[in-house]
Image 1 (tube, rainbow, N blue to C red):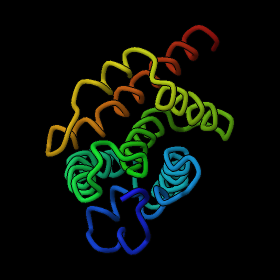
Image 2 (cartoon, one colour):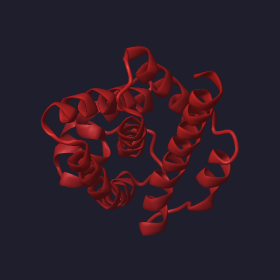
Image 3 (cartoon, one colour):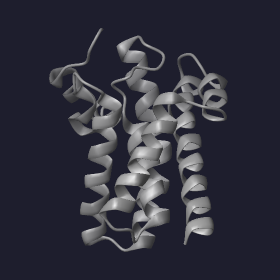
Length: 166
């Protein structure tokens, strides 16, 4: 399957999750669209949940995402499909959860730095991207893992910025 459709997304709960509730169906830059959706979703969650509750949502979203990415990649018959965006969603949530409160420009900068690490894949993100490949649980974890490393790198850049500039 070249590109998943809305019908494919609705055929299995794993597809709905892995495809970022539709944000991964974008024809252009699904990873960026998924990250934008994650940003908006985080801001909505923050209206109703405490910081601790959001932490629990994120903690649950990692194993659920692992499962969803594993199943969806197998059904798409592609080891790491670009339309799977749950990895970007979880990574962006982690970044915002650990950095908030921030104003719009801080959030936009965090978004941009994360997209840089996720798209360009400098080391150690490149290493993480190559570590777990294939189908099954190992491949599903690999889909998630490089974005978690990209989130860590983003957090490191933000921490260094705050330390040296502020």
